[in-house]
Image (cartoon, rainbow, N blue to C red; front, side, top):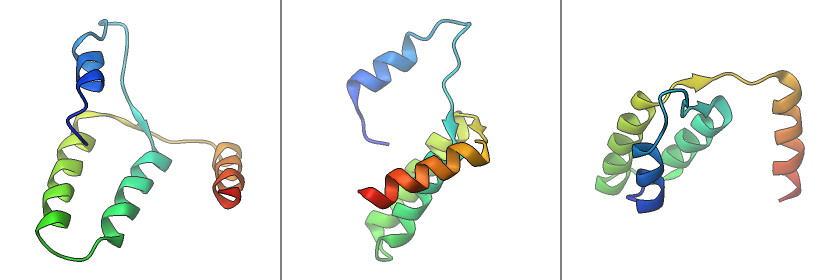
Length: 77
């Protein structure tokens, strides 16, 4: 959600055959981070940016196996 120039450049240069998407875990991490912030202007601004970003990228579901592996990795960090 930051104005990362490399990321923005990558999006602009996508081929028609390429698709940029996020998985449900990434969406969950974004939403979790927002909910942890105290209410206020910063949270509201980031929530608007998140809403804008998430509206432009399809959300792909993941399998139970991938979710379980993610949980194991997350628990170790």
